[in-house]
Image (cartoon, rainbow, N blue to C red):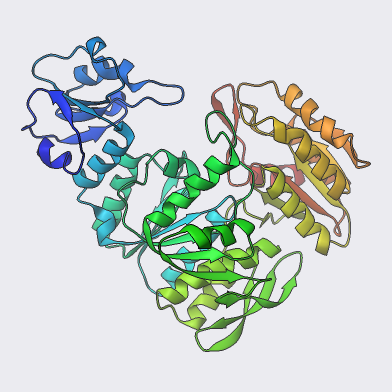
Length: 486
């Protein structure tokens, strides 16, 4: 594609060299650059792309794009390499990606889901319902990416960088997908990864404290404002009206919206809710009559996720039986996932890794478990350490027994993380012990559990690894549980 066409829509472009050249690929990773590429030298939190310009040129880059706050005198390129200077390199990269891949989201019905919790489960529910309806679907999210029923492998982040994102959308179009469902993280909105996407529908699940750190969001206001960007980009929104921030969102977004909930007046209301240790069911109006819907994922939050998915399904014309059947069959890796085992113990794996998500899952299981709630959790390293003591206090207050252990320590010493969690635990009367080795912690939980108890393995969820000092070691808790039990 001609470079001029790739740059179409970007304002205030400066630079030097020939802009009338053909570009065969676009990349923001110098290692992936091939002959006749356009390389985006983006400044990240830990890596400055301008340091890799020479590598990109050696690999065949014929054009380099930089932001105008870079000292151009330090950028040495030969006369046969075009240098492009723009006011906002991230936004420019997103626009270029849309242009290069033929604006694929204009050829799809695009659904974006944002919120602190529930994005993954809601996206899987929507995918399941639409596929039951016979619609070809693509999915982009935290666990993995899918195109027309084929899993493309584990995801490295919730929402990919703009180049990879548009590449995925283009593949969906090639595979004749009609709908794309994607989790839209606050970071992707803040960093313009989804800029230029043509969203038909936006979903707001909920909002609570998370992702507050120097490399993410400095405060809750920035976090919420980032989420709000999605609703300036979509035609229709579906909002959880029971969430305080959902009420706030209703008053400030420009698009039309519908609401769903349990406690407040809304367009789609769940009633007569039953929650057990293995499922929820509830009554809801589907098209023109009240129906009972059952989902084999326990917890009140499952009702909210199902309501969001049902809202989308009804909007897209899905019939009642397909909605009910799909929700009955849905299984989401690492989200309130019950692990089958030879001892018939109730062992739940959940991705809860923030204070509110841990409180939600423990409170949910506490409400319906006849025996003890045994909580096994840790906190990730190189993340907000202020939440560690809070999570210790939450588990100490709700669980009958807590085993504090390691999560993904990353570059921190797990012993130090555990000590910080323990400070919160000591504020409660909760019974606990510390076992830093996570496998040994799971062994202990299993050894002390009876069939009326529930073990909650919180924090890692779908992750099949444990990250230590930059290395991801195999760590699939489903396999570990069954290896222990035998």
